[in-house]
Image 1: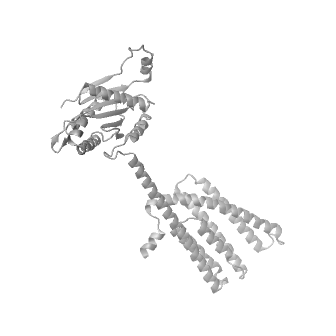
Image 2: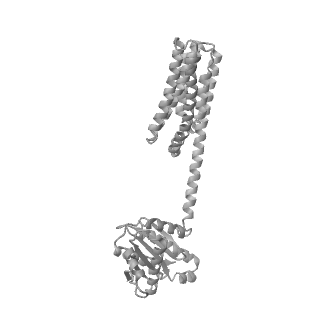
Image 3: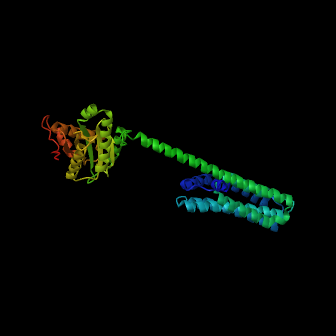
Length: 402
């Protein structure tokens, strides 16, 4: 029971930031509405004291009421000004300003109602009831602050006006205070439940999005997610910050798949995915874009020799794949496109890398071919050259040697 009560009153750490953010947003609106009501009500009260009262400010009692009305208007103005000043500050400071303003407004109503009762014992404690229930309903507060705020107001009211209250009125006052606490606690707990459910839904949606981006067999990016990743990295290409796009195709995969069965084929694909992760640990993205085709995107790699070395390493590792202790003699062909040109479209980079891949396959199994997207000036010369005389880009051909 005790644990359930503690859980009911506390805010889980996982949603604490969201709780404060949501509370600040809701309370900002409520505080603006409260201040507008204060301006209307207290300006009318000031007008009533100055112009509708026979004695005006001639009596001590009217001067006290006039001063209190002016004080509440000043508190409301200060609350609005301070909220505007700290609107971009840390949440803790915004919280302090917001709840400090609420506490001042509440204590003002406590003091006014207490003065009414000490001046006229026949007066009601309606102002206190309205203030405490209004804050409980419209202001979202953590349970600890609710207890401190309402407890302070309740104790101060009894200290100032307790002698003017009968025992029955004190009981009613206490019941009102307890009801206000219950409303505030329940409102806070409801906000915690809503935020927790929202967080769980967001986590589930994020997990579903991740699953939709994954190839179910290998766990790599699927074709669409891989394309999105490459497009994002191509958009970041600048001078001195190229992107390298690998296109990888397994050689003789169909022979192994047909000869040993689909379980063997699936095993080869999963082993290939695992080796890709090992060889390219800093890759911006690794994806399976076809049956036995894979892609890897690297960023900030300017060393062409290193790109080739990584390709050779992958070819050697793929050739070691075995099924039930029997070497499958699988290899792979690799096309690498190094993109130095900013704003290169994905289709252009894909076509160039794919062309390098198939030129590598024509060269023989276990080949790695590298080409480079030329600068804009090179493409202009190529497009202006007569047919059959276009200059070819730099292409490096290498054969894996074991």
